[in-house]
Length: 277
Image 1 (cartoon, one colour):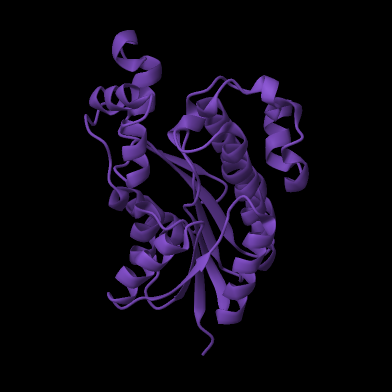
Image 2: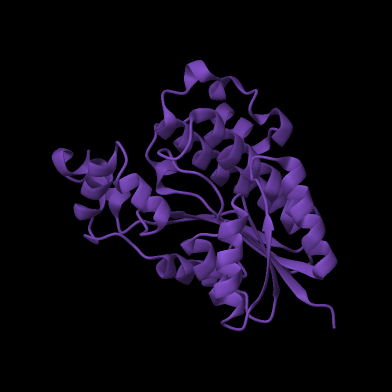
């Protein structure tokens, strides 16, 4: 029997939590820009009974993405995508954030959508940040959703003079992710497949710890302390949502983004000004 294959990008806590929840019985092709991180996660999971092949994969490179997909195709029938790769505002300059989080995600969703098996499913990890910026025009949203990936970074709204800082670049990338998911859901649907996004708030991971210790650390700590939940989230709580979206229980859900942030975005807009901002 041909084995089902999960493509997992990003060797972080969220990706691993989702893979542990949904990857049993599947061949998992794990790509990460840092091969040592991919190998470390593969070791943990393989020693727990999973079947994980670690690979080097740079989300900002189309060739690297295509190489990962080609390896996955060799392993069997690709039925699941979990995209948890990317960089944060404190980890990279504007250009790298746009190239990986925005362009790379668009390429990955499009290319996997071309070969996903009938009945296949995917989820990409976005961020609450996409919900915190000002609304874009309908035209700008359409451009982010539908522009061919190779032309995305040429859009006027993404030019350096229109991007204020790394946080703004990250917000634009995550807004783009969610619009791409909507547009790709139409294409995936023609293959009887589904794609959705999850927009986590502050989830305790090494990436989040970088943010806590970065220039906006106090902002992030204040964000979850004043949220209705009063705490940051865990990777396993994100995996709870992913399990719904990737299982048959989510069969009527596609093209959607699920915000999971303990109410932090609600507090940002509608809490007291001092606690929210």
